[in-house]
Length: 550
Image 1 (cartoon, rainbow, N blue to C red):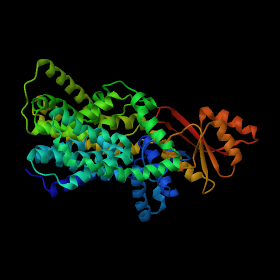
Image 2 (image 1 turned 45 degrees about the vertical axis):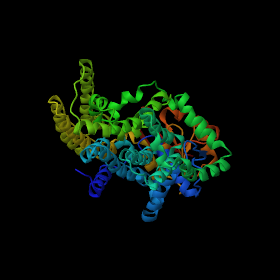
Image 3 (image 1 turned 90 degrees about the vertical axis):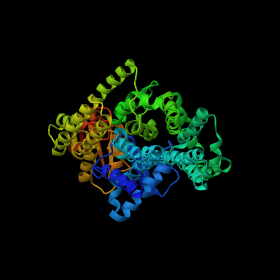
Image 4 (image 1 turned 135 degrees about the horizontal axis):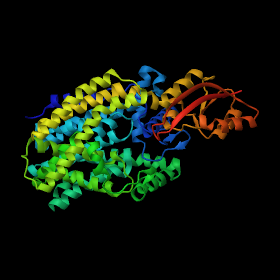
């Protein structure tokens, strides 16, 4: 079976549709996403497309590429729907949505080029339903767009590698695409993109002791294309920030993550391997089962290419001190392709008894995770909201039989059929989660509820919300960039200086300190509303009142 344009278009459309559920209604899903959204909005409103800022502070973590994309998508949405979309989450998520819809068919193309059409299709499916990919494709963060860029780099490398295998010249456009994608990657995430960009050809050279194909990418002058993409902005931000950007982004953020665990994410080597079972579910078990077949076929050029893609990137991020699951996401397409090849092409090799015992134990853990996923949405909804959602129950009823079918097929050693069942279960689970569970978790949706209450009560069009007990970035995005995240005493002082148009959000435990500080200025507080819920970032239960001075 040979894949054609219709197959790739269908895959892109399918990935687009699977990434749509809940996108219009989902609140900011983690602490990073609203920072990206707010910085992109401020860039759009200020027309300063060089200096990235979150409120009045510079956001010098990575270059401006992702903020340009989110600002552009939001500007397009604003022209169609009006300025109200600036406070909506969905316009900022458009780059991730389009990237996800491109990543899936591109993975299929790479898989089909290496192992044939059916393998490419299965690889695309395994990636498309994996937990981490689904989560990232729903968020306005950098990781899905960065994954697309790295896939483009690997596709260009594959073209040169395949041309070497077939002893034919490599077209100039392949070299231009490779170096241009490296430049775009530098504009997205800085030097991180060089790990897969240079790590793959270096690993191939070490494996094969042959670097002749590297010249096919025109390295003598290609690097000038990479620099042409990134240098203009680098010069501009160097001038504007007085050198502060590179001191923070490279010195503190990039190199700091290598030596020290930042933001409480310092973990020992092996973390990414440990969380892989959850992050790549349902494909994680089939990836583990593929290891003996991959080892047996390790000398195949196609396998060498994929291992050269996976190993350098994975090892680097296992060794650095700071670890987050999405750091190894760029290796998932290659893992999906090897997994699909083991299911579609290679017979199951004989394995030692100890290896079989390990794989059986891993299969038990995989089963527990899958069953937990089936029930997680309904259980979370009932435990937090004391209610049940019809979409969540439908998802449970649809996913559970498929999950049980996957288990039965595994016991019968019918791995391919088990993979198809598990992938179907994953699709239903994710749809139920984003359509029937997350939108109904009002207890942990504090920021949208606070923003709605503030919008209904605000005394002026330019009113400012002062929050002393809840300091999530999502509140800044939803309530406005002038939102003040300060302590209760400072909140009282702010209301003293701005008594007409300001409201303070104070938790019950901080009210005494807040009122004592207000009394010093001869003021008292009037409560206009109250909300209760859980801060999902730290699990703290909050009882928040919205106050104005009197």
